[in-house]
Structures are given as structure tokens and as C-alpha cells.
Image (tube, rainbow, N blue to C red):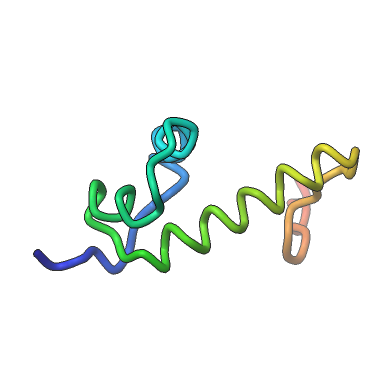
Length: 72
């Protein structure tokens, strides 16, 4: 079976979190969704880093340049 190259992991985020809490491995999660192991590995790393920052009381800001305000 071919692995998907592009995936919107934010759409399946609650399912991935539930699977991790059940004790499934990253490889099992990747196989279940038909994704590459690296995609799941990096998503879990980013998710854990974000949760640690939230637990430390840090306010998360959106990345990138702010949008220009449109003049009426």
C-alpha cells in the first residue's frame, strides 16, 4: 500500500491523541491512517512541545507576519 504524501493532521488530531493515550505506537498509528512514520513522529513532537509551552504558562502566538488590515 502506498503511503499518503500530504495529510491534514489537524483534522485527525483528536484520534491521534486518543490512540497515543491507548498506548499505540507511532508506527501503528501511521499504518492505521496510511501515513509515513515520519509524519506522525514530527506531529507528536510538535504537539508535545506545544503542550509543554502551554503548561509552562507561555502564551502561544501565531507564526509568521501579521496580516495587513484592510482600510474601509
